[in-house]
Every structure is written in C-alpha cells, then in structure tokens.
Image 1 (cartoon, rainbow, N blue to C red):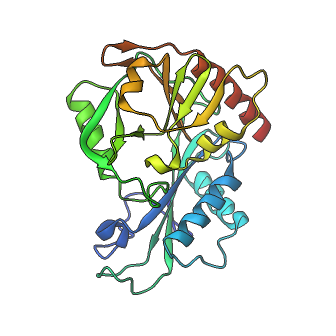
Image 2: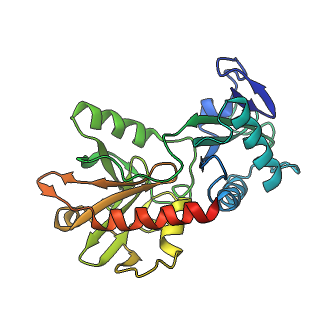
Image 3: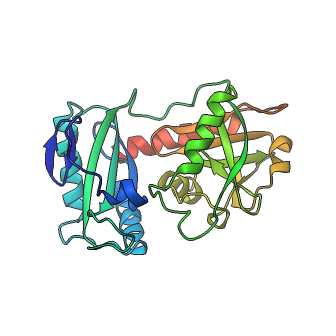
Length: 282
C-alpha cells in the first residue's frame, strides 16, 4: 500500500500520469526516514529539512503540512502496509502538481508515502568485504541544489550500473572540481589515525540528517575528531578507514578501494553510538 495525498492505495494503482513533474523534470524532493517500530528516528530533523528544501525549490507548503500531520500520515501508511510496530524504511516524496512546461502551472504540491520492511530496528554494521572505486564518467555539481535529496539522481544511477558491471559494491562520486563528494548512498567519512574528515556541503554531498547527527553529537569517550574538509581522490588510498553513512542503513564500512584495505574501528564505534541514540529516541 502507498499513501497518495492521504488516500491509501495498492502499490500497483495508476495514481499518477505522464504530466507528473517529478517524472518529466525531476521536480520533486524526498526524505528517507527509519521507523524502529516504536518511533520515527529524528523525525523533527527530517521534517525541518523537508520544509527548508521545499522553500528553496519555491514549492507551496500546504497549511496542513505540520509535523503532527505528516507523522499521522506516515503512521497510517505503516499500518496499511502491515508494518505498524515493525522496523521499516519510509520514503516521503513531494512533487509539484502536474504541468507540461518548465514553468509550473501551480506551485502546489502532492505527496507520496511508501514503506518497506527493514531487518531490524537498530543499526547493524554493513556487510564486509565491501569494495569501492571512483566513478569518473560524470560529475556532481557542487551548488546549492546538491545538498537536497531531489529527484535528479542520474549520476547515482549511472554509478550504480558502473559498480554492478565492474564487480564493485559501490562507487564514490566526485564533483566538477574533482573533489570526492560522497557515495552513491550516503555521506563519506575518511579516517587517518584519530582524525576523521567528511566532505563539506560545498563539495556536493547531500545534507543528510544522520550525517548532521554524527557531526553534532557529543559522543561519550570519543577518541576521534571529526572535521568537514575537502577530500581529494589521492587521500583515499592513504586513509586508515573509509565508511559511508545513510539514514536507513547506518554505517557501511568500505573495506577495499583499489589496492588499499581498511579497518573498521571507527565504524564499529559510531555504530554502537548510533544504536544508543536509537534507544533514546524510542
């Protein structure tokens, strides 16, 4: 079941058409939220990120789009999908209403909520081994739109195909300045000793909610210092550890990049810390 503008419909329903602006022009935003079965993790942060993104794209925010309204609609969707009280991944998509030209006929929006089951409520360290390489065929544009989760994800799509065709688990993306921006899924972290770097917003990475949590959280007995700094491709093979961070799956260590092999010490530490936050949120 999916929730389209408040109506619960079978996923196979034809609830949109060829005039859909998300389909025609990528005129859409999305948020991916983890449900533990007891709570929607960091829902308030996801909500305010969505509102800020909608304002940036000059979408008209409906009066009813309160935090409480969206939580009720998500809960309704989870119940209809048989996922109430169970771990699930929620995708909330907002797109401008139908129109055939670049200039919108209306700034009003429609929304779609989908839910899929997850294996567990807590975060599990991603599977290893996990191999990566750089994707250089196309670059991310490091601008004000790159921090948003919008529907224009062709570089990620093509990088996913490249990874599959070359026997890789993932790829790292670079921007037009040849700086490392992040992964296909999630923000990148690079550890050298006890120093951890993550590409800044100016490099073209998305402003992920869990990424901001990891940066701002005061971690107990934290042996690491995290900074936002430009990451060059040269630094990747010199690192002691690489990992990706995604709102639904948590931390995925990269164990192999070209000839380099990495440890998972920081990945394990922050996974434990994130799971403590899950228990607090619940």
